[in-house]
Length: 202
Image (cartoon, rainbow, N blue to C red; front, side, top):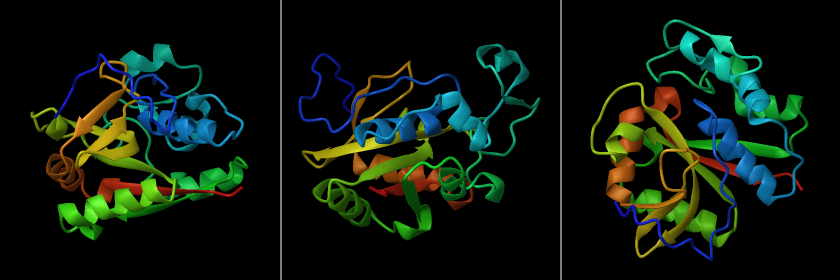
């Protein structure tokens, strides 16, 4: 993985945003909304509609949030889009956000070629995609409960360039496709590991 961060890409399709704790999903969606000129709402509010849940010690960082002593699932704290009550398309319709999403889950990505083809098509068509995976795998230290979501930007020299909302990581990173695929598989279908393909309803 290339973590060089002294050059800001001039060809990035996205303006990076930085997340509050556990808010990678709504922050990444907000980057897509901003790109298309869709009126923004607070990422905390968007996250709440997507099932955002945090531990008691982090409640202080939020105005209105669900709190649980234990993570709501093996995916850890954060949003719960795998729960039918918080399914993104239902949320977008309810909030009048002109987006729709289709999930290409881990088992729909049998190999690196399939992953790269899906992302190359997204880039070629100038559509938007988020990547959901186990972040520990990307860091080389697999652990459960480390689900993370980032924005797919471009394919660069056969690597996947991502825009990461996490305040502790570079905004742009290059990830080897085989490592990304392993991270997606570790997160699994049950917790929406895979590529989330978005469509803007202009």
